[in-house]
Image (tube, rainbow, N blue to C red; front, side, top):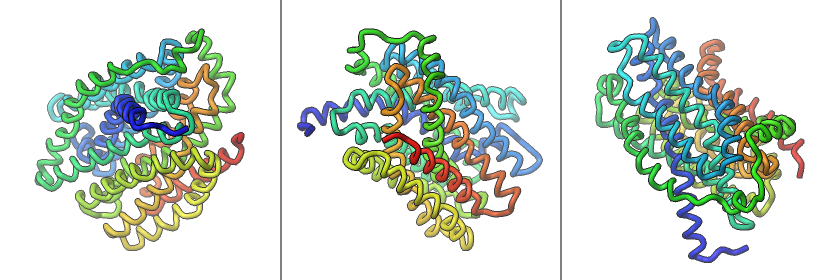
Length: 418
């Protein structure tokens, strides 16, 4: 069904208001990933650079461990009380975590309280993020006009790419303006404070959201206990969703949050080069995601899932091996842009497909549980691949890890119903 200009403008405004919180969540996650080395030195002083980095990346991964709890408890709340109220609640919880991490003094000032408070802040962020993606995806799928669901839902991931670009631009500017010592000592706090300043604006525009017509039109909404039972009853669909989402999370965190650390610590490139590559990846993702979402509206979801998961399975390790054979800015950029294309092609179809296969009664909780369980694994990618590289001595291990995720995704897409 065609959309007129006035309708498109109204939909664009709605997408902006819905996805704004998703932007803030991903911005905070990206900043933590970009400056993980400096954060590690500030909060987790250790006997070696590797140990300090591993403590920091472990804290980054801790936020993903509580996502399933946020998915089930907050997801049940949203399926019962409504999409709009749920999005406001997740934003409030996310803000608490952001403020905590931005304002906590370093280990040298308050000792062990510093890492404890940072971990608590990450737990709060992770709990809210467990349902944020699901809440946004479900809202977009329910407000989409007929025949355009893939395009509109793709902006859930599209808003994340805006966050990647914004965070990378800020990080690149700071690395250019500040001496390395200043950036490591206090400069990394600037992006976190910027995130705190964005919070009031996001609250203001999200408050103007209306409830989705599909949710409001339902005569009865399930209780929390009914949602929990529904999630258990649909465990096969949720496990299938976990397998499908795994490639999305592994590829996304490989090409975004881990790239600055990988470029600097593993490939020995400059901070500026690694952040510039991340910026280009975010722009590439932002270009391809809505195109692939719209393409899935025309061709169907499964063909894209099968094609792009198979391409990732066959190419991820070879291109990574080619990169580490002779590391350079040009090679890193080429590899990351190829992986960006594969990620966007797959994810543009996957997210909307997951909203379609989960029963409507448990749509938010079921989607969020599947997504958060996969993200618990995929979001730990920086930690996993850093360890694999250290243990094996093979700097191409991120490609091997991505190939494993792609193989699982291909099998899940193959088994999925038409």
